[in-house]
Length: 112
Image 1 (spheres, rainbow, N blue to C red):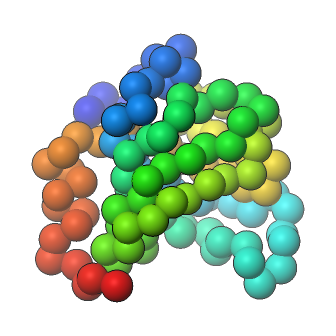
Image 2 (image 1 turned 180 degrees about the vertical axis):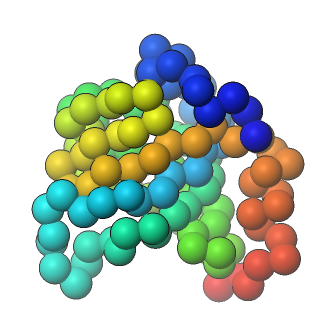
């Protein structure tokens, strides 16, 4: 795994092909049955740099241990502190991972 003490200035300038793992730490605003649960996680390719006021968009490869390609979009980002991303609905931990870590997350998992 790459150095997770990466500073936020680097996060803002991440390339679109950066591989990330997002883990939900807390719900700030419960939107009912559609809200993702605490400890929900996903890994995939970042589509756009993470910026305050914009949504996090990831081309997801795996979520909660199941290979499930698709797109994940967060609510707009309110604040960024180190590896913590505060959105309007949730608090997320962001990890930058490499290809081999993503491959470990993808296998031997269940395919959806």
